[in-house]
Amino acid sequence: MARVTDAKASQAPYEQGPVEFVELLRIEELDENLFRGHCHAGAPMRAFGGQVAAQALTAAGRTVPRERLVHSLHGYFLRPGDPTRPILYQVDRIRDGASYATRRVTAVQRGEAIFTMSASFKKPERASERQRTMPPVPGPEELSDPFEAWERSAPEEYAKATIFRSMEMRFIPADAPGMPPELPGVPQQFVWLRTGTPLPADDPLLQVCALTYLSDLTLASTTALHLQPHRVQRSGPNRVILASLDHAMWFHRPFRADEWLLFAQRSPSASDGRGLAMGEFYDRDGLLVASAVQETLVRERPYHGAGDQG
Image 1: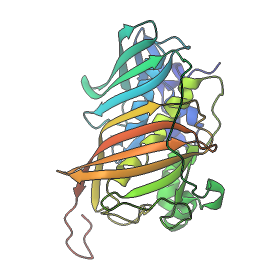
Image 2: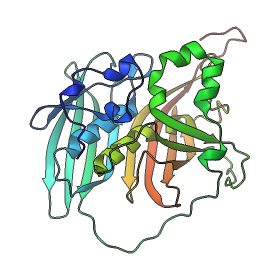
Image 3: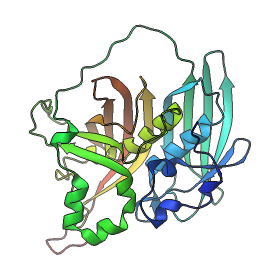
Image 4: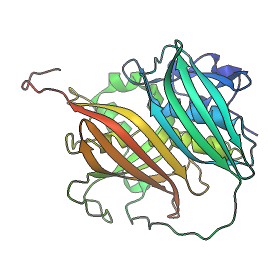
């Protein structure tokens, strides 16, 4: 039985090079309801929000009986996390009912909350089912690896970003067969995602925490596709400032995060320096396994001409 709570989290091993994806979720139990982890940078000197959320959910799940599975989470990013310092996760056991259990997690650095999350767990039950049909888009085997293109175009930058070798992504072109038509004012992007290394099959919580991490990789950029249509660009000055404000997920059916999942994302609104993105995860059999919604800070950098580096 795999657990991602142990003393190995006292250091951040992925800072030294590529690692098993499970290491990104590993936290150390310090005391009852108190855990410690490390997170890598998502932006310069800012901890990656998806990893903070995934570790917070890991902490919450370790205080709930294994037969209760997480079905939803709601998180707020309050301050930028420092990737050079550990993060403490404080768990409050809000409620343990007959079917449902609720936990609240506060991630703390330097005595200040950087992230808060509420997560709900429940016992599985039989019920009628329905879902939106998965679009008949090309499979991941038919698509190119964006990391290979990035490595060719910016080898030194790619060599430093070893964390990307712990996951796999395939972007589906907008004109690919089977792609739903894009509605006016609603930019969309479809991406296949999975962890880059296998995950233990006997830990459903680990699968959900891994998907929580993966869900934060592309949602923010979906809100700004109308401002930066070349979504896989990794070089040159960034004209858009993006930062996650909040993040919510609902888990509908069992899945494996180390197998390809289609992330169908759309952004129905952008205003007031904020953008909203919604996404659905489908497995290879077309089952809708999870949904995600995120609000993102979206700000355009001033443009001062071709030589501008701002």
